[in-house]
Image (cartoon, rainbow over all chains, first blue to last red; front, side, top):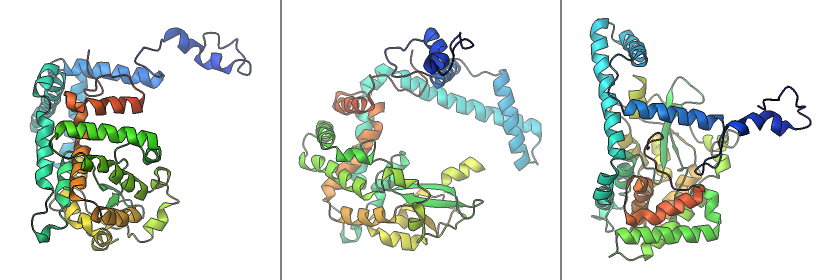
Length: 273
Length: 101
C-alpha cells in the first residue's frame, strides 16, 4: 500500500493506493517477469531451504525436534506397542536418512562440472531402455499389443506418455479411493490448443527432429517428424482443456462409469499409512 | 466402470496390465473412472494406424522432453531454447526450486 494511503481517495488513484508502497520498496530484477508478495515468500523459502541443505543435519534444532515429535506421535498411535522412547530413536534416524537423501540430491544437482562431464550418458541409457521395451520390430505375433512395456517404463520415471492414471476420492463415496484413467494433460506442447498454431507446430517439429537426430544420427528423420503429427492427433482426440475438469461436462463420460472401488495405488498407500 | 469394460475401449494399450503394473501388488483394481472414454477409443485407433517407428520415436521424445532439463549437452540445447521461448523466460537454472548461488 502507498505510505499515504490515508490521504488517497481510492476513486482517484486506486493503483497508487494499493501498489504505491510496493513500487517504492521493490525493483523488478532482470530475470523477473513479475513480482508480488508470493514471489517474496517463495524466494524466502528457497533461501531457507538452501541454508538447510547446505548445513549439516540439525540434531538439536527446534524445528526438527517438533516435527519429529509430531510424527512419532502419529506413529505411536498406529503402533502403540512400541515404547515412545524407542520410537524417537527410530524416527530420528529415518528423518536423518531423508535429510541425507535430499542433501545428496542437492549436491549432485549443484555439481555442474560432473553433470557436464557425463553429458548425455544418463539420458542415452534411458533411451536405450525404451528402445528395448518397444523395439521397432514386434517380437512375435502374440506381441501385437506390447505398448504396456514402454508406458510402464516411462511411468516408472514419472513420465506420462499415452494415458494418465491417478487415484482420488470417489465422487459418490468419498471415503473410498478410485483409480481414474484420463488423457494426458500435455502431449508435448504446453496445451492442446497450441497444436492449432501451425507456425508454432512447425517450429516445434524442427526442434524435435533436430534433437532426436542429434541423439540418433543414423536413423531416418521421417519418423521423428511424424512424432509431432502423432501428438497433434492425440491432442485433437483429448478432451478440450477447459472441459477436462469441468464437473458439468463430466457426467456424460461418467454415465458409463461406476464410481466404486476401494483399492489403493502404491503411492497413495505409502502416503496414508 | 468395470476395468475389463474400460480395457475393451482401448485394446491397444492393455489397460488392465497397465493398471496392475502401476498398482500395489496387494491391490485388486476392478473398477476405474474413465474420464475420457472418447480419447481412449480414438487413442486405440490412432495407435493402430501409426507406424511402430513413429510410436517408438514418440516414447523417446517424451523421455527427452522430460529429462532434458537434467542434462547438460549440446544435443538437447535446441529443445531447452524452444521451451524457454515458449515460457517467455530467460535462461535460469532449475536445480530444485531453491538452489543456486
